[in-house]
Image (cartoon, rainbow over all chains, first blue to last red; front, side, top):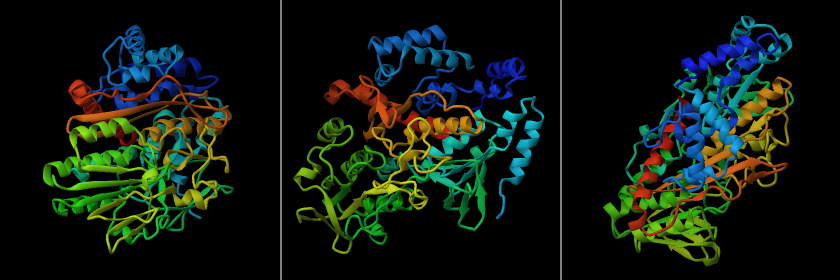
Length: 104
Length: 430
């Protein structure tokens, strides 16, 4: 698994082109935001999914936020995601939703 | 002194030379040598993340072994449900990502000169050091438990090449039916808080199938432990009458072992004859952290909760079991999660930027307690001013309840545990 999937590379290129004059290093910011990095421990690198743990890469942004809210409210069957969901703020969930929606 | 990174450095400079503009920032980037000591969950994850997120960084991983045997799932090996190759991971994936592997012992750190001295005498210079050295056993903290005694009573708590775990497995196989398996369990803090209790469970699972008259005597230097209610429910349900757990307040603390007489002796002088003994001894940060002056009186390394930089040395970020992370557990997941934060903080400092904003340090620890029976604890932590803070009203353990009601939950968590193992080892080694 790498970060060179077409969608992400496209974003990378766009960032390089738009920001290169002052800060070419920003091209590297296409890697996951810090808040999304810990998901990899169960969902796999970049949320690719692993065994019984579902893929979250490419998850629809709005569905991600709604599913998260349902876990948080115990309105969706869960083993551990309900316990996890309660520990993150709406802003953090939004960041994760943005990121995983961008991964193909 | 041999500059081991000269060649890598040259390549990094060339690659960056093709990029555009911003000379001052580029200078910081091209001259950046990130050295990682320790190829476990923390160090491997750090090296992998560093190469992926900051591709122009020259990353060197110093690790004496050419492959890594995980602590997680070692307990399943004891039950005969995994083999050593199944819990062994190579560094080829990291090499393919451009991590320079140096298979030697890191003997010493010179924090002023910013070099790591290898056993072979060479020095490896760094701009930022990620130190993920793991733990050391406090030999003879329990009287009679030195390195020789570990050949009779394996600790199997630092896998190394897997020899200790394999030894304990062979001893269990040779145990006569009706024999006693003794455990000596340390006080907090120690590596993998639920680990001893998962081990008790997996040994019980093996005994139930193969030596049903055998007993387990678990002598503990604590009065409470991780996922205690869930473990004890499972022991009563799956292994009734087999496991006796003795807490500190019932004279559970083992203070002396006798490898020749095969005895564990507790604080108040009770002597327990055992056939197979697993001593999980008191621990500290690994020797290199102590020698480098990074540890405090506890034997562990105080760090800045935002950056993981050691409070006693600049430019050395200490992650994994060696640091003082309470209330975070000393777990592979925390090592993996925080490794990325430490790398990002180190790179920010190299580039003259402030440390990245606080984020979540995440932990889930699954334990197998029997066939198709998994339990978990979740912790969500954030950096405070001087310590780590657990996020309230979140995380926690699997729901308790009779197996008849929770069977599907337990089955799914056992599956998720297997998925976790696959996912996190990919995030560290692939």
